[in-house]
Amino acid sequence: MTRTTAAERRSLVALAIAALIPFVLLALWAYSSPAPAWEQDIVNRLLLGRNLAGDVVTTVNTIGNLETWTVVVAVLAVLVGLLRGIRAGVLVGLTLAVDLVASLTKMLVERGRPDTVVAHLLYGQDSLGFPSGHTARAAALVGALAWVFVPARWRLPAAAAGAVIGGLTMGYARVSLGVHFPTDAIGAVLLGVAWFAATTALIWPKPDPSYATASLARRSTARSGDSPLSSWRKKT
Image: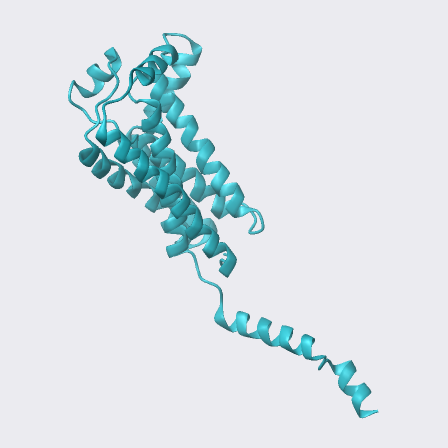
């Protein structure tokens, strides 16, 4: 397991803050006013029927259901723990906990779901939609997996990009199913990215102080010109 560098940790914290701020602003906007008509129009346009695309979307949504997703994450956490160590497994397992934050936010924002037959059948008339828990979980999980398996040099940009792509994929599936507004999905992507970045900064091993001290000593020696060759030249 490759430790984080100081620069990586700063970048993780910056990424978490950069995603969290617009998420909070979007949540405040969703709380202050009902979903605008253009969001319902987008949902209506994206609704898929009984065809191949619709079957794919239904499958993605089924995998994203909390019960199925819990099993998937648990299996992945164990496998990752065996392959990459306990911390890596814990990081993957903790992606499931973002659903608690999403559920709490739903209760605070109190924004309804789109006016579609599917939303009414699956969740009833008074269910809450902002943000999408499916989408937040997908973003956090893909980000964590990319961080764990991509080489250290590229893992941060790969994880950030993976979290966004994974979240948008699930978000599209939720909107095209008719159970979420587009901004429910966008907010959830931001939440998932923030969750991945924050948990990684907290859980992943920090830089080794002894390595940092030794590296600083080597740089100091190099700047002072006190290399073995320079010392030999001084003596001669």
